[in-house]
Length: 162
Image (cartoon, rainbow, N blue to C red):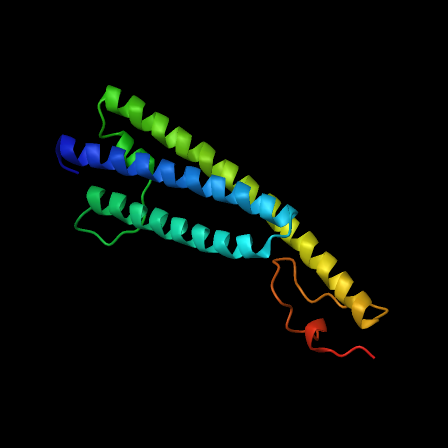
């Protein structure tokens, strides 16, 4: 890393990253509301928003790494690497950014887990409802714990009630 300009660029990138993580948190909160209200149209839009934000965050990460290590393809970055190169004032400011980013990441992870539980519950409800409509006595679980279609079980969507 060379000079004050690189340091300012990294600080700006971290500030932008914090802003994007804040937007991701807001999108996850919006997703939770849409899940609670079963708003499928909104959920599709939210999925696109999340994907876009995640791509932007990944791009920022690559920019930070290329600013710190322009001659390497190493995709690993640890904030402690930069911490040792900073003056005391810069270190204090950078530490505050890192703490804020860390808290946002924890909050996002918590929201993500909560939303996955809501998705699992919603899929379970839909599965039970379809079983009732199709007149099945024993409902077959179609989705695994990660809310993915379980290929080993026949899908209720393809069975005919009888």
